[in-house]
Length: 126
Image 1 (cartoon, rainbow, N blue to C red):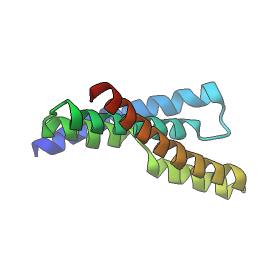
Image 2: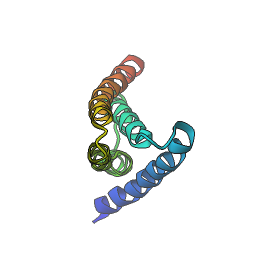
Image 3: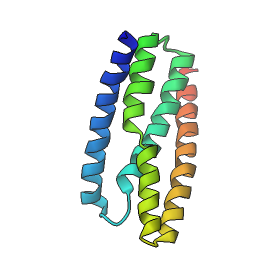
């Protein structure tokens, strides 16, 4: 039961952070494109790569800390379910170019970001 609480508490923090990004980003970048979700997915992928590498190379994090950070905070922060809904909304509005551009760039940039996080952590901590 304790591990569920670590995941739940971390998830609440991650979800609140995601909400903050999703509320503030349209004010900065506009409302016609789901910038907040894209930014969250890319940033979350980068932090995931960074944390996983740091934990493997130099930080002997407890299982509780891993569940709190990876499952909880990052699980609550990243939004591939929201990503799917955003894609569907663009597609149903017949904004096919935006929809497929969003899907492709989100996936490619998130993959690049996770590798960048891995590289950064390995460079600093190895």
